Length: 217
Image (tube, rainbow, N blue to C red; front, side, top):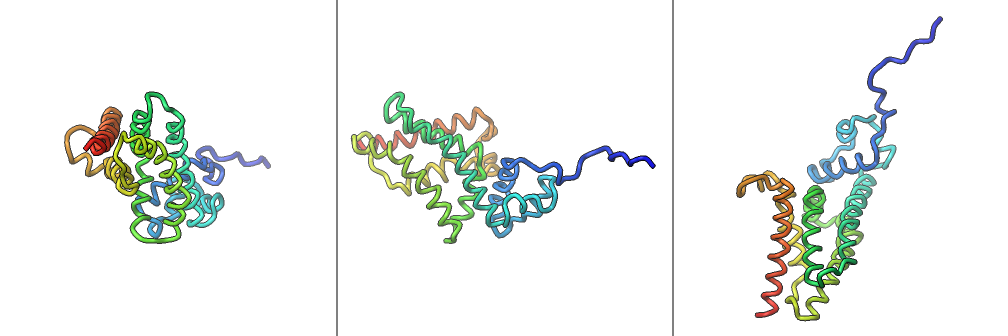
């Protein structure tokens, strides 16, 4: 008796595991759009086209997946922002301008990060504690170092860390975390590469110009 031939077509999902980056990118969208309580790992498996227990096998519980997703997302942010701190070309004012601009560009590419932060920041929780203590606070401290040097030199006015953070992160980067509203305001596509670059330049220029003007007043 002959051995049956393997059936042609797509192999079983469990034989085609998705790369970790693909899983985490999908999880980031899920947690940003649905919140932690509304997120479904089963739905994520279906979206990825993998076996029903692949995500569980890779990451364990939904809670562990959330923590892995946050670490992955903020690792990407840090990898793109921190090199700007080593680049002192053009002096401290230009360095801070580049940091603000890069921040906007990073979040234009990954708008789900700020949406997730917004959802988690509505109420206190262990997840918010982790998000802030592990990622937000260290990143803010690192990015504030060049700003503090400018304040010490009298080049810009002192500004609250809270004020500056919300002005840039949840103000300057808002068009990308709220694209449907952004498309209704003004003309052109706010997600077009040229529009993103122009917006990042404008935000950085306005923030620095305002801080310099306050220092002179």
